[in-house]
Length: 265
Ligand SMILES: Nc1ncnc2c1ncn2[C@@H]1O[C@H](COP(=O)(O)OP(=O)(O)OP(=O)(O)O)[C@@H](O)[C@H]1O
Ligand SMILES: [Mg+2]
Image 1 (tube, rainbow, N blue to C red):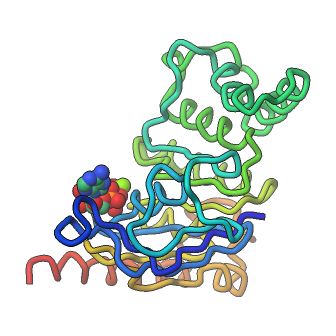
Image 2 (image 1 turned 90 degrees about the horizontal axis):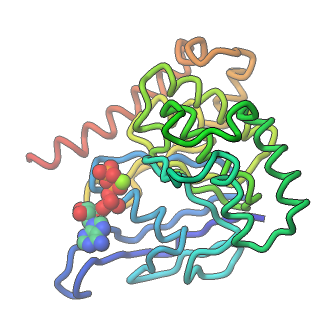
Image 3 (image 1 turned 60 degrees about the vertical axis):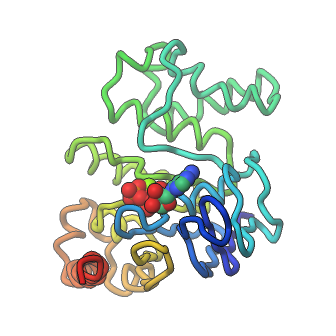
């Protein structure tokens, strides 16, 4: 399983009464194997939401739960992929992917077979003995995603994972993530600034308000993807050309622009 629930979640940094209110009244349920993207203005609390699910931080109000259990700390049922690939530079690709499995005390033979499978799935086999500095940014991020996936977590948390990549590499990674997510579905919470990326990847897109971050709108993309048969198009640019896609993208842009405009009202 991997059901994520935010129940009346608030987060204040600093003293509860006088501190900075980063999140207010967040209520959201993400179903098992659902892919949800969060978009919102810079500083609206996206990373804060993700950190609460990861267990790096605790809410001031309400509760964040996975499969009905309030999250207190990081755990093996959740894996995180950051914008900056966060690989260990002195370890090979293989050893970088192996670290989490070692931490979980997975026996060696099983580690080897799981790593072999993920290297194969992500076309990383030729690079197993390379070090991060020998890889392009896209390759490094592929390793970071492999490192999260190999743990077989119920929940994958991704904070602008493609934010540091050039536009073309980004498209390749988006297509790969879709491929991976289809073969190996997981509950995914994905944060991005790129509206197209959110619409292309997600089953639902959550739009947040500027700080104090609240949920402004939740858009159901999956039913439109299905009704308009987006999956019959192989290439991302063909999907992005569809009228239904353009319509959703514009709707989200308008909503985000309102948030920015409010700031100067
Ligand atoms: N540890 C902290 N102490 C104090 N304030 C914090 C802390 N972490 C985050 N904040 C503040 O909370 C707000 C939300 O931060 P957060 O990082 O969640 O935003 P974000 O939506 O991820 O922004 P971006 O799109 O720029 O990454 C920001 O105003 C930030 O300055
Ligand atoms: Mg952030």
